[in-house]
Amino acid sequence: MSAATARRWFLPLLLALSFLAIEAPLGSESSMRSQIVEDLYDAELVDPDDGWAVGAFGAVYRTSDGGRHWQMQRAPTTQNLFGVSFSDVRNGWAVGRSGTIIHTADGGAHWTAQTSGTAKHLFKVCFLDSREGWAVGDWGVVLQTVDGGASWRDRSLGEDEIVYAIDFSDRSTGWMVGELGSIRHTVDGGETWVKQPAATRKTLFGVAAVSRETAWAVGIDGLVLRTKDGGATWQVQRGDGRTASFENLEPAEALNNPGLYDVKIRGGKGYVVGDVGNLLVSEDAGETWTRVLLPAEWQLSWIRGLSLLPSGAGMVVGASGLTFAVNGHEMRFSQDAATSPPEAPRR
Image (tube, rainbow, N blue to C red; front, side):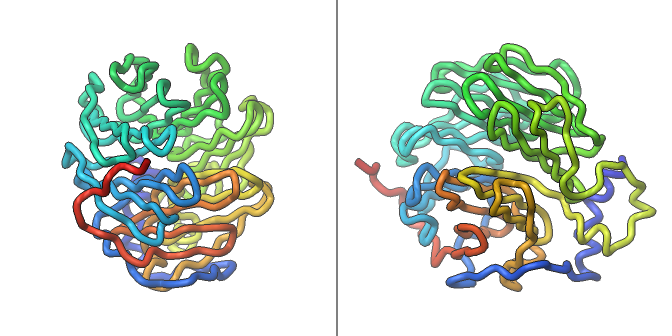
């Protein structure tokens, strides 16, 4: 087991012995727990009201009021779903274990399985419109569709390299990141992907492509990287890019540098989420980051996914059904989660 992997898996044991130091409080309207019980891995908001969250055992939930309430939707799978992407309020895709891809064309009233052509786990999906989308995952798998998922083209790397995330700033420019500091960049719509120097060998779990020149990546040990020159160079904003031995790691250091899983920056605001209730907020488009405090019941929970609108409002999801809306340093927890049959399509 590598040092980076060991640190990731041993961190929960350290949490039982120590408490994470927080730099700034976060206000909330309610700390009531959601009735969702499944671990949630990703979320997607398409507007201030409409959003989806996906997670363990094929869980799919929809909100029509900005996350105040959630309704379960029926999915044609019991596989864990790790990523979700909607091109608009009707057309969406989710991906997960064993090459699972599911699709809806009516806002989730009905979900159908699509054929991915792989049995490898898929960790992230990114659609540029209702036709073109990308999915990435284990063993270097990269898939592309230009027909809404009716068929998926194998664009895999040909290397044993886990790809955890992919994002595009426009139809031509995108980045994908993965294990051992892997960063790949395209300027031709994914026809070619070029490796870039990452200034680290630590695994990266999330990426946000903001413009042709600017992007962020986050990963293990509280690492936040940024490029302002199209990826020619990447700078460490938070954490330490150097690889250290787990045996030499002090508990307090591990707690203050938890794994980070997702990053989003839009409309001048930014968010990063990760282990031990870790939520970083930026009010200056990612120039600086402030760690903020969740209610006590969530301070040791991991947070895995988030979605962000141009207004700066977002949705965050994580362990044991954790869901809450964010807007800067304010957050709102969901009031409940309906378990009734799926709603009729919105017109």
